[in-house]
Image (cartoon, rainbow, N blue to C red; front, side, top):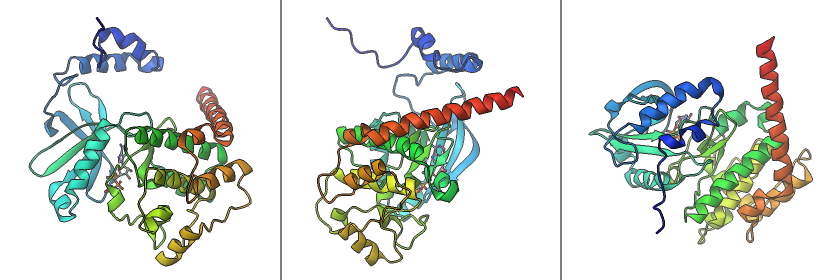
Length: 327
Ligand SMILES: Nc1ncnc2c1ncn2[C@@H]1O[C@H](COP(=O)(O)OP(=O)(O)OP(=O)(O)O)[C@@H](O)[C@H]1O
């Protein structure tokens, strides 16, 4: 008879789980894990309430609520708590979108997708306990980068991680549809987390810098009001990769009509600093049809070389920090 698959770790798994934790943190992490294992909620359905979390620093503000650093009182596990006001959701007529986001995000489990750990509500608010991505929005990092753009290795790594997350989504019949640097968060370990599922797709975002705002990422089939499938995400990945490398989206323009026309005509200008490999990848994604598949993106030579170089860059940065600490 086959054993039922073990869904939750237990004490015997701790040494293995802790093997990736730096030595200095092993003891507190071990303590926290033991507290988590002994919590009534561990591995069972549980009715969480806001009382079980201590709210801390304000991490950011969205259209319908605020995000705080929060600590679960029993285990001291830290989360990013997104607090949404029901009244505001009602006024914005986005209750259904929020519920869809919760439903989708709670079943997606992937290293490059922001985990929704649990959610609950009270009379006035909905609380989403999210994994922490302490770097915040990739958009902010792009704005702060020299010339508002990332170098090729960093762009290649980020493009790979987004492709990996989207591939997982597609395998689970989810189309993101709203890819853009504002909907991607960065962790302290330079890893990307896709966020905002099926929700901000319908909420205009006033943070983008051009008049036409989020139109910059619209694929031609959506511009033409034609039926579309999951390859819309490949289009958006092409726009995202271009924006990482160039600092603005390829079809940005000062009027909606002009952006639409540029998208329809595939009017793309590739600046001379772009490498042959990056142009090849972007043009394979920004096609009307037969866009490069996500697995092919992940194994593209420009992506592979860039990722290896980004790993070397990060190692060098780490060595630099260690040397500084020694001196
Ligand atoms: N998991 C997280 N970890 C760290 N910071 C976060 C996290 N989630 C959100 N934030 C911060 O809080 C800000 C607001 O997040 P939120 O998701 O509410 O905003 P948004 O996507 O801009 O809003 P909306 O979806 O309402 O348009 C983000 O810009 C980010 O800086």
